[in-house]
Amino acid sequence: MRPDRNPLRRRWDRIEAFIFGGLVIVAAAGAPVAATMAGNWAHADSARAARVQQATRHQVRAVLLAAPRASVSGYTINGMAPAMARWTAPSGVQRTGEITVSSDSPKGTVVTLWTDQAGEETSPPLTASQVADQGTLMAMVSAALTVTACLLAAVATRIAVNRRRMAAWTADWVVTAPMWSRQRW
Image 1 (cartoon, rainbow, N blue to C red):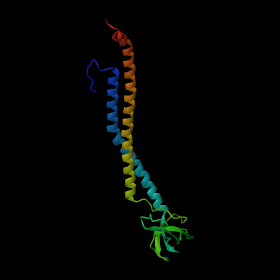
Image 2 (tube, rainbow, N blue to C red):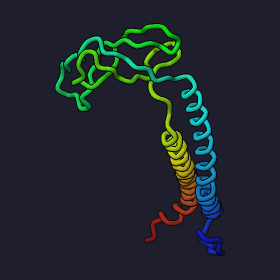
Image 3 (cartoon, one colour):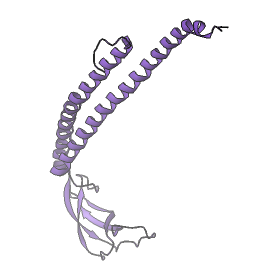
Image 4 (cartoon, rainbow, N blue to C red):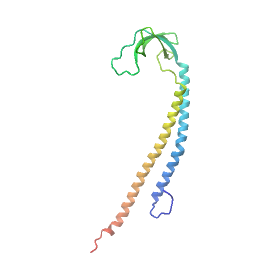
């Protein structure tokens, strides 16, 4: 790997060592840069989405019209079940639909529900910790992808250089083999 004057070291060995050294530098310097850039981008994008969600999503109170239906399977883990409810959309329109509530909620229970402007049920807006988590996740993924790309480039380089080595070895053997295979009596 080091650049010495070893007569057995071929030109392709030196090229391979140079490429591997460059890939190590790219991975060491590129992964943190990629992580920072991708993390900042994802955080800013998530923060923008959270602001939009906070402006367009509203909490409303819904009244259960019926008790939740019992679960058919025994695989429910969270104790939640669907139930019919009625609520008033932020626009003032009365809405009726199926929502997910605690399975032990009786008829007439008032629950808090997140809706959009039209009154359709939706998820709550992103929290500050969710925004931060999305930035962190993107930073880790981009760093891992940068290192993986460098490793794949190293493997591809190794395969290409080994093919060149084998071709050179075959060419040398074509010249050397007749001298070795002569029978001496």
